Amino acid sequence: MKQPVSRPPAPRAWATVAFAAGLVLGLFLLAGIAWANFEARLFYPSDFFTPGSKRERLRGLQCPLVVAQDETAQLRLRLRNPLDRPLRRFVRITVALRHVLLVDQDKVWLDFAPYETKTVTWDIPASEGVYGGWFLMTSVYAGATGDLPPGLNDCGIWVWPVRHIPGAWALSAAFGLAFGLMAAGLFPGGLSAVSGATRGLFAAYLVAWLAQVALRAWVFSAAVLALLALGLLMGLLQHLGGDDGGL
Image 1 (cartoon, rainbow, N blue to C red):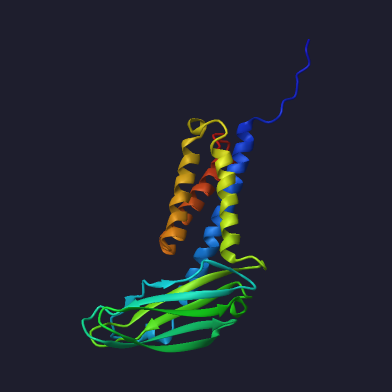
Image 2 (cartoon, rainbow, N blue to C red):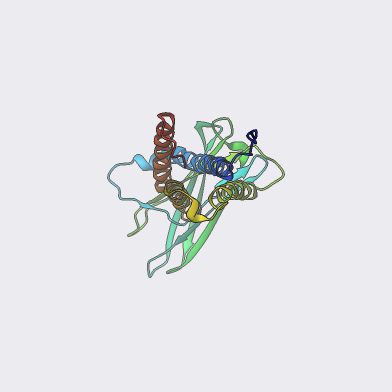
């Protein structure tokens, strides 16, 4: 009688581990970015609480998602005069300094020709981060003038504990690793061999990634992340309860 020969684990098991590791890493990255923006959303200057005034969101504010500890974050605001006459308008940026109750403000006056667009930039060192240096939190306010209501927007930047490499590069490498691990778990035997649940998780993560990184819609991305976390929790509970369907 032949003795049973031990065999290495099936490729499916390794694929599941790779996909799960990539998904957890990817969720961590998106959650950190969303958290930074959530904290910044709570950090409004007093103008936000002034009653009786209509406000618009400053869509032209651009901020990096991640910076390194030795890096300087550059904020960029594009502001346009939609009127057919010259316009003078002030813009004020408020930056939290190490503690949320300590702030620094910079006020700039801009003179616009009719329909002119101008760009204002600010440099913020990562050393000014709050909550132990993990986040940079800023709020930008454009004053009302003429027929234009005041404008407001906020920006949260995640400070990574790395040096000598730009935060955008580090973030791209981390996302590349996450997608690489998920791809290794998705395609070892062809997409047809992947369960519907796994494909659904990957599709949901891809939607959250696009919303966060490409569209900067962190609120929508956070909602998708919450649904993903709930789905993972339910799958784990089913697995512990004896359902061996797996991913």
